[in-house]
Length: 514
Image (cartoon, rainbow, N blue to C red):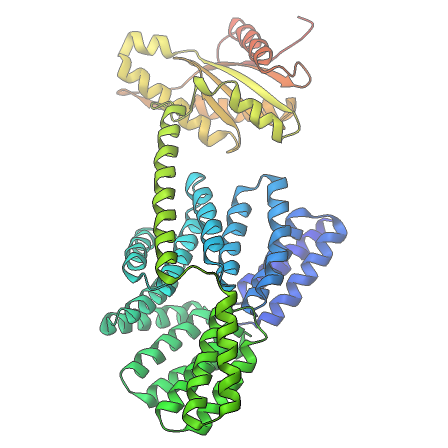
């Protein structure tokens, strides 16, 4: 089974590591990974397989099918309580619904993804979500708001050289937004930067989009020859990677370009191709735009039959889109963003109340509720550890309370670094702490304590001195010793007292017979 899981992981990695391959190639790999994961009941592989399939479906313009796969991803992520995968799925829901023209639902999912990524500190996902919100704002014409978010995003990425978020994506969106604002010089500069970085990093999709934006800029400058060259370069890449959205979009732009060049027959053939192509896809806004382009060219050519058909298509698509007009969409987005900021302010206040300001651990007021919640999602199993910092009083008496604060901060840092991220770390009072390890038994609890004790035994800078930190600890297990949280705390406290009596700097597991 280990070899089969490794094969699944390799297939998933191939989908991500070869940006030049086509969507169809990625789709086949994702389907193979999903089939193999299902046969061995590998939940993470099933998630990643469905996720890659959804991504391919969106690239092919099949957004409704993508949403079906994302529904499965979301269900798996919720079952696993995997916040990273929940945020990734919410982000992709946002993209898929926007592609379908359901802006309000798109934003709802994107804000959920942003909430999770901010709360749980997933900066890469946070950057992608901000990027997608900026794209929506720009598409809706709210360029000023989009630009302010993009400059913030640019600052974040430039300040973090280790960031996994592609800088070329930020440059691409800045180029698009500035072009829409008729800031041509800046737009061209960012488009060129985007193209150069994307070529260097082999980010084929951004290469395609950068060529497209440069084509738009040249068309706006009435440089039709260069515009045509850029459009055709973008089209070649879009066709190579089977990006149906950009294939339809670029053909529609070429039809307008040929019309401007006076080649009305070529313009009509190109627009008709774009029209027939896009009608097979789940992009209602793009369908509507291309129908209007075709109608304009039909009017010039006096093609009454196709003029009527394209105008009827335009009318029908418009009626199926959301009823809110552009102004209401922009107002809705701004209201949602304001609401989100208010929610984040309240969340920050709640965190300040729940966190001990000195150590960063959860405060005593979160006991026992946080542990009760943790038990409810981890099968009512876990280890509760009661810790007492042995030498805090001596340090306070000998070196002052500032040194005592240094000791507590050093202890808390080792606690955070040595124990699993999912472990709950609670400061009950001055020198007393509780740690709860979800799903842990005796072996895992003692292994984690050994790791913590080793770290604490090293000299820490306390005041002007370097001293070890000594703690005594007791362990009680749920459900082995009790299922009542307060009872478990009492048992762990008793075990800690036995450890302290045996010689400080050690730990004991609660013994029901003693």
